[in-house]
Amino acid sequence: MKRSLLFIFIALSLNTFAQTKSIKKSPPLTPASPESVGMSTERLGRIDAMLRQAVKEGQVPGVVALVARRGKIVFHEAYGMADNQAGKAMKKDAIFRIASQSKAITSVGVMMLWEEGRFKLDDPISKYIPEFKNPQVLKSFSYKDTSYTTVHASREITIRDLLTHTSGIGYGVIDGDERFQMIYHKAGVYDLFTTDDITIGESVRRLAKLPLHHNPGEKFTYSEGLDVLGYFIEVISGMPFDEFLRKRLFDPLGMNDTWFYLPKSKAHRLVAVQKKEGDKWVRYPVTFYDPDYPVKGAKKFFSGGAGLVSSARDYATFLQMMLNGGELNGVRILSRTTVRSMLGNQTGELFDGPEWYFCIGFRVLTQEGQNKGGNGSKGTFEWGGYFNTQYFADPVEQTIGILMKQTRGPVNDQTSWKFKLLVGQAIDD
Image (cartoon, rainbow, N blue to C red; front, side, top):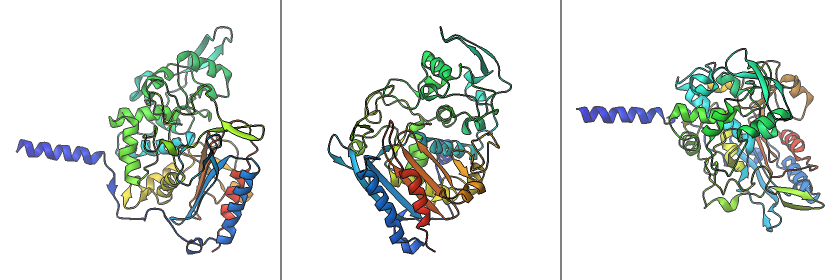
């Protein structure tokens, strides 16, 4: 009898950490003719011509583009080179460093645990990561010796603050404020990605002791909050962050090309980061990070804000799940009620301008933004990544656009805005 009860307990525990089947069963993304979902093959050809010209003109060394509508892939093509120095052509299944596109995935991970009743979004993060107790705001700073003074913050940092970049936490080496660049560097806080032997938990605990830009909830400051939440997921789930995403999100959705660090069997598909030197594209050098971080080094730093790599098709799969209200292929990742809340305005007037607002995981187009033209329908959600990747999902037109590139440094790249416009003009129903 005792053994039977133990097995029941284990089964229930495992079920708590598994995705549920859905009454709804949307099909996985599959190719189809554009006309079958109300798009024009001839007008999609304008995307093809634009991207070919962009590669020819040296705007980008190579690119993978994907367009889907109503759950069907109607355009998926590769152009140019994945690595010019190695003579390696771009392929449709190429894998890219998606950097800040990781943030939306981490946000979904947080909301999956929220749905299980593990915490409230307005709980203080210090309830789960005690080092964040009694946050301080920077008052004065000495450039001579990097010493500083602080004042007590007006309140604790909440989980919602971290999800919406309103916590007051900064972003170290890419922070717009040099003082915070110096403070984070001195404290040994890691940004974005690394090959070094450090965990996200170690870095986050160092970060917790540092001053804030401003009081929580007072302003929008792009931050390492999603790295904090990656560690938070480890604390709440009792699993390493990479393992949580693999078991709870990537495997259920069939996102087999999305990783923090690539298996050896997939490493050859990673696109090189390139920069322009004269009229040639060359590999980007080691700076404050090694561009080869997804395939070398300690492979222990699971950055929730910037650490993932993925393919165009994998990321389209993730976005299709969101467009479907949290379900794909009969697997329920989130309730549509949760997705609805996520995509609502979380920051009021704090985000930049009247054309966009910030929700949980994305920026969202307003009516004013739609009226301006070229960015999709009201409610379109999107973001991008440090290595020149972009995406958008339009819930009105049920359209997804993915544009994957890997460049750093100054380039005259006009593909992002043109791609978005050209996807919209190809709708023909």
